[in-house]
Image (cartoon, rainbow, N blue to C red; front, side, top):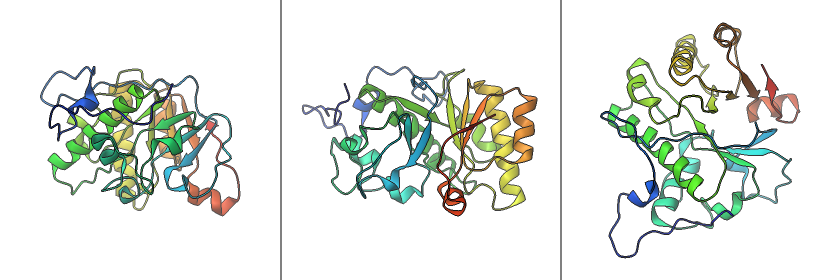
Length: 243
């Protein structure tokens, strides 16, 4: 049974949201990331963007996953996911768990990591993604863990907390603006496969021939969902293509 919101303790001033990681286990070492693993029953049949939720009544296909592959300001900030969970609030015009209860599962928020971000900020965004995953599972949601990286400097922490063998979701959307961007994406993908050995990788966005070669060489199972931009140009539905 899915709950509407986690209950924030009333007897203490928990400004850090420590209650969100209740019953969590943590990684060993210097980062102490909550350990999470995707708990879905099957690979999604379709995906839908968070920015479309609440605009009109949704006619969801069975097995649809909610994803957060949007600009951060759409799902973060004052009325975003983190503030909703940490403050125990459902925002009528922001994040509201009641609006997403009909989804089969949720791909957890893709907080951005940029190469020019301070490292501390990058670590914070990875931590928040893991915490949200754990909190949503505590609320009874089926979740898919999201993996995000920047350059090689982020490898030390960006995969922390993702259980080995977990199903993971990644997005290549916006990562192909230049050859260097795409190379960073492929290098990080290869590193993730080495470290996590995912059962399946769920891609949102395009998969280039170079990326497919990496997946083939690693004998990695994957499924691809095209981006909203690509779909609107082609006029097709967003169902997964397996590789």
